[in-house]
Image 1: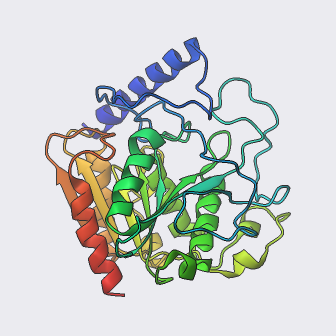
Image 2: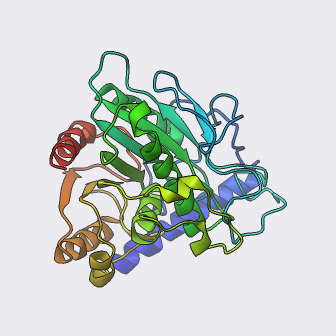
Length: 328
């Protein structure tokens, strides 16, 4: 049954890719409509073909910019010419959402004035590493969490042709920036969480398994030159997997020993019973529990993959994360 589920998902994903290739590839600057398509079974992480343009002029980087906790900002994650990479990407043949000149960035979504600040959440939208579903996931969830007291950050990490490890370094860099400016954002430096949808959760898991703490870009690219921000820890106090898991695209990790060695933070799972990857979620959760990683699961009856901010999971996540932050 599990094999048939995976095969079905791959067939659907292949069909979606073929349909996309019949027309123009959506650019990273497209603003999609706000309507939600009817849910269909997809490869984990391919819940939408939406692209989201970075907001505002990006003339600053995390190494040079002083954040403004009252205004939305968009900030480059790497200094030009010093981004750790093992992928040579010089020409877009039409198969990729981002052009070669794309620079990873994060978008800040501040807590409204007058709202008590609880902590920070860095959000990674899904998209099968082919696009970032910010319209269905990143922006609406960031807005809801900011209203609840979380300084929210949408991470526009690298997509294909870059690999999962390169994207994880983007996220680690973003975590370091938030921690380095904890005072400006009005948070305790320990009250930082990562939250990912589908492929975005996998990306977060990759960072927590292999690129947190003091691990920097030299672990992947020996030509990378570390800077002062690399002295800041990329650890987080909580992880969120929304229809996602630790592992690779469409395949959950059940490596108990790796989970133990990685000292993973408490992890929150939310997924629907109609998701084709239910078995993967459950196996990953079981392995985490065997590794003594605290796990919270919020299962939505009848919900498919890709429900974004729907399903009423956000209040439950807020309760859980508040308890995690207060217990630190």
